[in-house]
Image 1 (tube, rainbow, N blue to C red):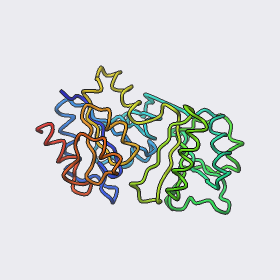
Image 2 (tube, helix red, strand yellow):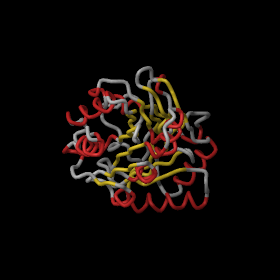
Image 3 (cartoon, rainbow, N blue to C red):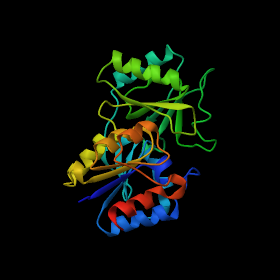
Length: 277
């Protein structure tokens, strides 16, 4: 018997216009009414996720930044936090500069009114596609290497897929067990995104930790997503669902692939079928 349903946002619960289809909203309420724990598991920062799920109009637990920060939307209370070690952060910045890779840094400063730190833009840095023109929740600093103790959730590189895959492999080989990272490809902002985080920072580990607090076992969890940062939770859950529009890596580890994509409310269609709603 399933007790918890964890749902990704982009490419999953959201359509391509970043809206939640009405059928998906209805199914979330049906799940809650029937006693299922519903969790949003996203690579997005908490503030952004909270804005995007407003139309659901009910309290939800959000695993943001791939599970590095977990909050309850009813009070914004922190349930789980995983911050990147500052020394490991500095090593990462130094190594990426050697390859002309310049990141955006996500931090846990929700109550302070910002979630992102960027270096004051220099030649060769690309922030335009990642930050929307009306973005207000960021701070500029001169140099990441001068950043002192900060609650760093994720270091995000956008750009050429091959270059990011090579860097991803390099840091994990040279610095084993110091980072958790993945390359995302099912995105609109760039050819690819490399996300580097705390070594225990991924959706599945945080979801499993949260579920344990609730007395729910991995076998009682349904997960649904579309991109490579969803692969672990889809592979390890009691029932792992890949969207029809998912990356090949995700489809290969899924128990089920939806018959409809994210623009066709594939989440609602598949959950109704599986849970006989």
